[in-house]
Amino acid sequence: MDTLPDFLSMNETDVREIIVRPLLERLGYRHGTDATIRTEQTLTYARCFLGRKNPKKDPPLIGRADYICDVISFGRWVVEVKGPGEDLTRDTVEQAHTYAAHPEIAAWFFLVTNGRRFQLYQTGVLANAMLDWTYEEMDDILLKLFNIVSPAAMKKRSKLAAADPGKPLGRGLASKLRIIGGEILYEDHEGDHPFFSAESINGLRLPVTGGSVQRGNDGRILGQVDVAKAVPLMRELNQAMGLADGYDFLSATEYLSDDPEHPSIFQNLVQTTTSAGTLVSIPGLGKFPVPFEMSFSAFTEAVGFVDSDKFVGTIRLIYELNFSKMPAHLRYVLEARMGKIPPTAQVKGAGRFEVTLLANC
Image 1 (tube, one colour):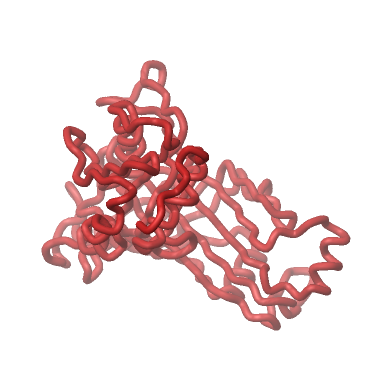
Image 2 (image 1 turned 90 degrees about the vertical axis):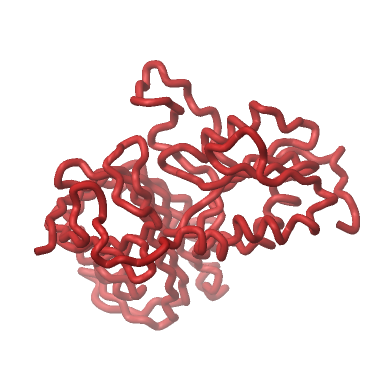
């Protein structure tokens, strides 16, 4: 490093944005990609526990991991940031470990830092840090760090020794399963943009109409899930954006978990762009062209376990629409009616799901 930051004038937020986020980008992580950076992760079970869960006695998790570096459908690691004036104590390490070890995150590694010093741990091995370095040593340590937590390293780590198409998917499960039914319940959705109100999504129940679960050629478990759309509008918009009625979920887990305290994590990321002039059809309004180019991304994460003949759990969704290419005259007209229109719209939500499995004969 050529020059040292002015640590005396920095707080925790400064460390995050001036030191940590550029480091994550050097390692290959960027928001909105398949090696994304997530913040403010909401945990459905926001308590740490040993053995059986007991919400009345388990200590609450205070706060959330500052960053989750997620190589979607392969694995993830977390970063906990402190201010430059705080020491990296045992409490700091244990706090970060509660996030990394939480069943809805299941991170392989976690990093703690105050900007001056950095410590990388393997989750579950807290006696000694895997790597321990100072800000001045960053360039010297970067290659070692890259070989452990870069997206390429995470993908390499997740690969099974051999992709065995006949390998059982889990305890008591065949190597290939059919999905013959189920339901998704959408809850706790909220939007941050005048174009979108997420209130209509809350309470929505969509039937699962079919699908399959099997191993892909790379050894990951692939869940193909077909979901009925609630109204024609959703189907039309999905088709305009190049989205199907089905979802391909991938997991680097070796087997489907039947343990609710150590669930399997499946993820799906869809990114697409709709060109200006693309025709969409809305019931009652007929067909009309989209007036400007829109880019869209949808991240979905399903965390669940096998219970008898069902795979059950929770689902988390993040939808983003980008309107940065909206023509200035159109933006002026809309903002005159609706107020300031941010260039990106985001809808975040959670819910529950249940799918019924049947051995593929």
